[in-house]
Amino acid sequence: MLRLINLNLMFIITLCSSSAFAQFEPPRNDSGKPDLQGYWSNASLTKMERDPAYSDLGLVIPSELAAEITKNHPQVVRQITDDNQVWKQLPNGADLSRGRGYNAFWVAPGSQFAIINGEVRSSMITYPGNGLIPYSEEGKKLRRENRAKYSGIFSDQVTMGTDGPESRALGERCLIGMGSTGGPPITNVRYNNLYQIVQTDEYLLLHIEMAHDVRIIPITSRRKRAELKPWFGDSIAHWEDDTLVVETIGLHPLHAERHYVAALSDQAKILERFSRYSDNEILYEFEVEDPVYFSRPWRGEMIFNSSNEPIYEYACHEGNYGLAGILAGARKLEQETRISK
Image (tube, rainbow, N blue to C red):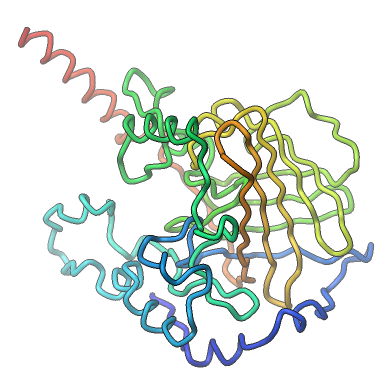
């Protein structure tokens, strides 16, 4: 069921200054550190890059326009109208050309833009000012190549061959979630935007609803695993006052090659910052640096809102009839091509 928030009330509640947030005293654990534990959601109409429709508005959507822009957002319209589908009537296939695949009942992209410091945000990216990832020429070239390989629903999942299951996307094979839901940096997608944080003095654990991914991040000043390149990279964390800072290098080669922004080289470094922002919010900040694929470092921020919803099992579809059908269809096409010759 669509959950819409009264926007007028929302703006009244969020008309507080950044100085008010700076004075917030976070709840603390037994060790005196800010308590980040709990269930959180980053579902939002605000995405990583700024939509061209909002390029003239900049990072902050004016409050007098936000209600109308939210009402007319394609995802909000879709959730209200369910793509005009009729109960017990099969769709005509037009939804597939718009990147659908199933009706609005199955998605939960959020129904409002993110609000940070009382500002309605048009993108997660705060720098550069245009809200776009600053690809280098090498990065643009690789991104074009990746898009040429695969232009389906999840355009961030690349290298989509049909020689065998190994040539399919990582998300499709249920190895890691699609769209960088686990990061780094973390972004949101159409559904499964819930996270559970478990925190001890030695570790921070991020349990991601999408694909049941888990990041276990040691809180230490010494890097002990630099020789390893696991999924989500080699991450360590440390406290800077009341902010937990996570530094990541060395993503797994397949993850780096197929990262949602195009790719990350072995020179990439990602910083993530988690700050308890209020009783019901965590401020998530990130910075990405990679001299190979980006022309300069880029930064952004997002809000995680507390959630009363549990994380359900992610029963991924690897090995089901979809994957078997894709590969079988490719073999059939090869056979027909040989016969026609």
